Image (cartoon, rainbow, N blue to C red; front, side, top):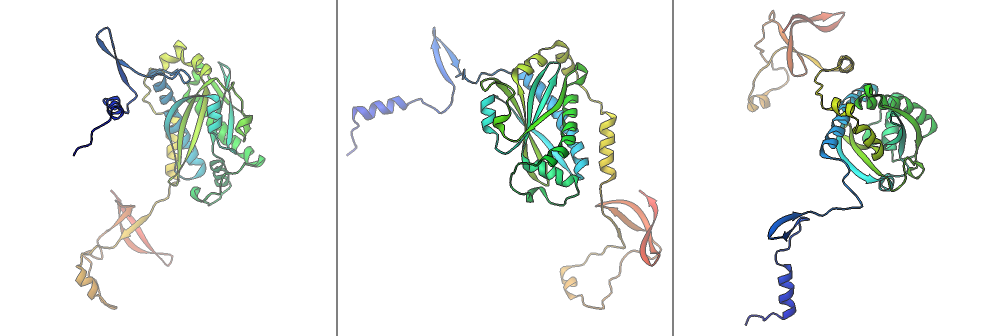
Length: 325
């Protein structure tokens, strides 16, 4: 016999009918169905989509130029990517920062203000070690610790270049200047605005040896508003810049010229079945299709770029390049 539902159970079922997990609801006003979306007044959306795209373009340029500089300094491939642009109150940003950390204060000029560039102490220690010739991999670095005064002095040159590239990305012809101000390891001592003031945090991802770490750039919204509502700034941001600067070309060429590669000379190639390979023994001779006077192939990596002739030079085996393909 089927169970008869009580009135309370019926009411509970009717209450849940039509409910979903989405945050959008609909309200009928004057016979017309209108879409209603919730709005959090404690976290207002201050940036428009256009302004977010402008900030994104600025930091994409910064990621490209600074990753080239960092790769040249560390003598390895360092990649920087932009992950997100978020709005917080300053107190929320401070709470999210680990202690100890590396907080580099940025002094803004025209208009005046202050910002923060935050990165992990692990990345700072790795950069200092590589600059002094260390061979430790980034993934094998020790746990987070507070960096010393000597390490701070060494990192100042690296961060000066960082803020220089960030200034160029913010269109320095508009007299926007970002400079190294000071260093703090405890986020509680880093005060650039009041705790309730809104800030915009740009999160970047630094990838070294396949190991990822984050770098955050915190801008006060009041400073961004003064910059981004300037007519000259908006006009220049809408211009498409497709030309590559000479500095970028020279930086890429410097990295390429110092890149190591494998060169191999192939005397000949032969196809054998697995059965024939298993039957080979000591003293067997393999007949190659290459004739003695024929040139052999010289490969750079997997690409055939030269032809040459084998020989000897000063009691060492050698290959004389005879043709460039």
